[in-house]
Image (tube, one colour):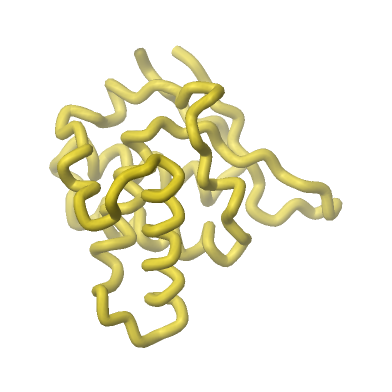
Length: 140
């Protein structure tokens, strides 16, 4: 088992935090969760920001944000998760603290509606990783 050390969303000492090294499939779950949180005709600031995050993540992996669904591995879940490559894009570096709160909400809501799927179970783990300072287990 590999552990990715999680990060604190709001460091108390003012220091910078290290973003997680999530796998492409984890980021695709993030896109899917953000898509289900809002719609393309977003009207609120948080909905507009959700679409900006979708575009940020998709651009980092050179994926069309309207075709991300074709990149998702349906077998991806808690038992298949692996750490992202050290040279893989990590869009988290572009996130602000409010973005993490928005992503956590999206992942938690997605996990609630998809709890019977592997992706939903993984979304629950990702949301918990954002919410806590605990380590996120990644099984091989």
